[in-house]
Length: 230
Image (cartoon, rainbow, N blue to C red; front, side, top):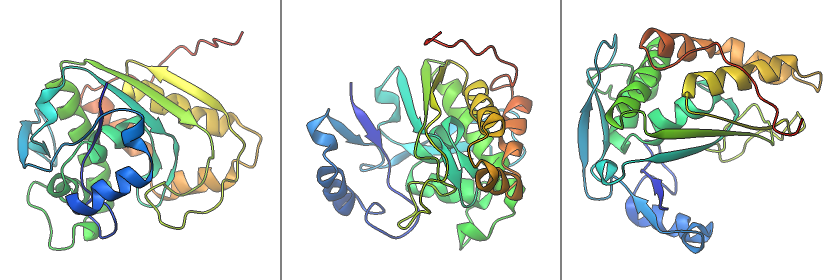
């Protein structure tokens, strides 16, 4: 297998390929498997059918080089999206740097400051970009969400809040909507100081990403949870 990544849309150590490669090396990813910085040599458009915000998604030019993606996501809170899981990972995560700007802008033409876009439009654009990626791969994807170190903040935050909930477990599905919905439900069902993460999700209208993904035909919010430890 190959670990794939794209440059970020915000300043830091991952917004330019040269700096990004240094960060990848520092974190030891190249000792695990080959790494492909997918937008290092350019980007391509993949179509989105039936979207309200986007007609296409901008991804790295290396995206079509793989016919199956295993999407390993750390489920946690997020300062903008409310939570980050499978849907965020295959939308923002797989998008090129410019593609990330379009998603944050919530429209085809990126705003001068992409982070000034309408909030619900951003959430809907995430769902639409995720749908474009899933359809481009003909559903050849596996989604694994790891519910540990449950902070209200994302790993992309340089100074995230300390985790406030204990680890819950690992959830997997062929449906990105179902696995994210199941993780959200597990947070609500927990009696382990779940208030801060629930507040983060509700204050950001986070479930709307899931709702719009269903509207796009990406997946189903109804699921059956099978406990492999039982």
